[in-house]
Image (cartoon, rainbow, N blue to C red):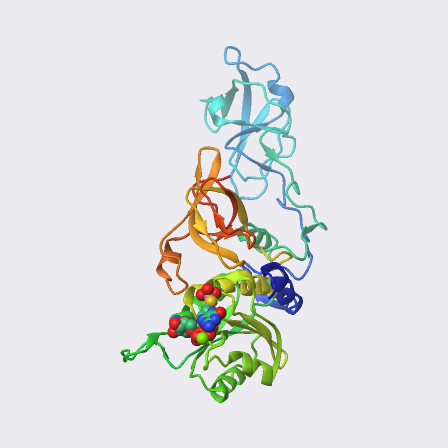
Length: 413
Ligand SMILES: Nc1nc2c(c(=O)[nH]1)N[C@H]1C(S)=C(S)[C@@H](COP(=O)(O)OP(=O)(O)OC[C@H]3O[C@@H](n4cnc5c(N)ncnc54)[C@H](O)[C@@H]3O)O[C@H]1N2
Ligand code: MOO
Ligand SMILES: [Mg+2]
């Protein structure tokens, strides 16, 4: 039986980053750049003021103090968006707003808070400056953020919100990214009934398709629901074949050794089983292989086993297809507040809560840990990892915990 790391490596080795597509800017949020983005212009495009105040020459106010302010003549006004202001000479200033172009001749801006303005007759005014300023203070140089010709965002950059904003400032309405993987999701089981009809005795509701579809979406993929197949090889085969243009198939149920666990047989007949059974709890019976050329992740039917196995194997595979450079399962080291047993030499993913207390992270298991109990996963913010070599974990033990949504709980580390 393979360990978790070896199994993940095998899954990752079977998938590739998907080909690039050109997408409208906002549709590319969260995806990975498949081009080097080079700026064709300076950002900011012109020298401008970082403050509301007066643009002037630093040398003119070198000796200014609150007791001995320096008076300058105000020769005009510069608002953002109204073209170039008048140039200034010695002894002159321009009233300027944040974002307005700097007047020719000015090298600094003094904030309104450090000045007093005086009316000195019709269309004339003077400003008294109460503080000396450095040349360049409160001035944003053209190109100080981005220089024309520079690679601003290299290929492989994940387009988080700030990168989307940078692309907008470069006037990029579309951008080349690795496309989203389409993931076909099939639940199997005679007892499994999709949303709608009331349950008859012995039947259970299909929750896995929906958990998995949400996980696929959260991981950057596009779920394609293939419904529920009864435990018949023909029906499983037909429903899998019916999936068009998918990059990955994910099934739930029917991978253990019961009389009606047929997913592995279908995989064997239609393609190849690359691996079956992993030293993981929950999730052990998982299978991985391919149908034709499409990789297939055969997850166990138990809802928490399907969830945990998808997070360990499905999400990293999707991230690789999306062009991410690392499989991205963020972990923290935390101290256990309560113990837990781990029989069976499998790496045990215990649903739990991790939290910052003082100067350390602490974690504890939350709720029932049965592989069919999905509600306790809704209360968890992490999976506590008990190594396969441990028979049990005791309070005070240091463990790795996997964050379920990549956001640090309870403040920054
Ligand atoms: N003799 C053994 N029996 C089992 C073993 C074993 O090692 N030896 N492993 C157990 C473990 S661990 C797991 S996990 C399950 C995996 O079972 P299968 O993948 O074969 O899944 P099914 O038998 O089809 O279903 C298991 C369980 O999950 C429920 N289920 C199935 N599909 C859905 C769905 N779409 N939504 C909600 N719930 C679903 C199903 O009703 C069953 O209760 O095998 C153990 N057995
Ligand atoms: O691995 Mo099963 O997933 O323990 O319930
Ligand atoms: Mg079974």
